[in-house]
Length: 105
Image (cartoon, rainbow, N blue to C red; front, side):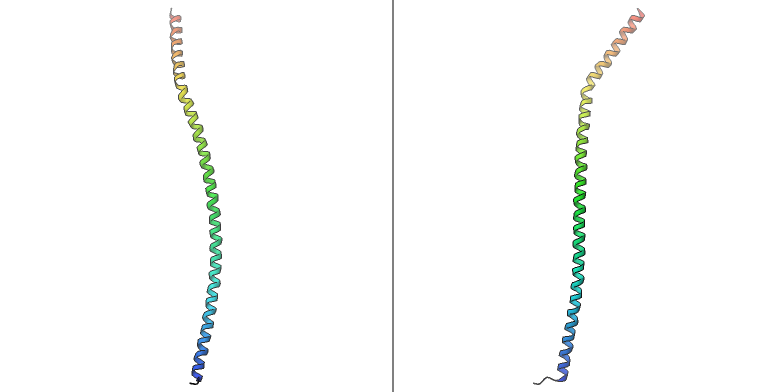
């Protein structure tokens, strides 16, 4: 069986189409490489931003915990002073009553 001119032309067309397909695949691969690079860059940027955000959040939580501790101390001190203040107020009322009694008598 001898190759005919038609067979040779068909095989050449198939070869040319395969080359064009390979060229398109190479272009697609190049675009995919660019996309992968952009995605990796975006991922790195997002990771950096997340870490920065977590650091800010941790700092704020630490500061908030300190403020809560301080306020708890203030409230405890205030609660401890209440009986003393009430005694002082009662003493003032008693002193005024005595002064008023002396002034009248």
